[in-house]
Length: 139
Image 1 (tube, rainbow, N blue to C red):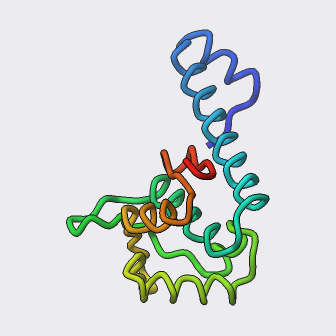
Image 2: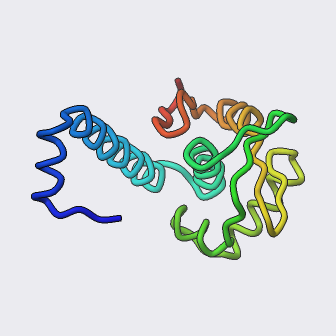
Image 3: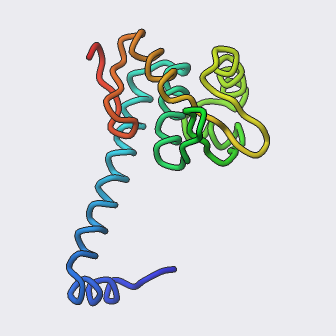
């Protein structure tokens, strides 16, 4: 679906709540992008992969009965592009996280154990307040 600028302005005039909702959506996207940029500048790759899975779980995930959050399967290449690293490193980190019980994945889905990831990050001095309003050092 796409709207022209004139159509959006017309819809917002008719329904001001739409303008507010669109503004909130754009701000959310900007904050998510800011978090990703800061993550690339501040954290090493293992932490960036962990933070990315927290953000993806919150944004795309569905809570599961076992406490995990399920996201549709993404290729390692796609995750690597999201994190800003190589596919090989993402594969290595995902295997490490699986061994540590923080991820479970198949070709169909990825189960993210958000609490375990958050706890591990906190132990490294990375405070996770909210997955997409990420992290401050030492908090």
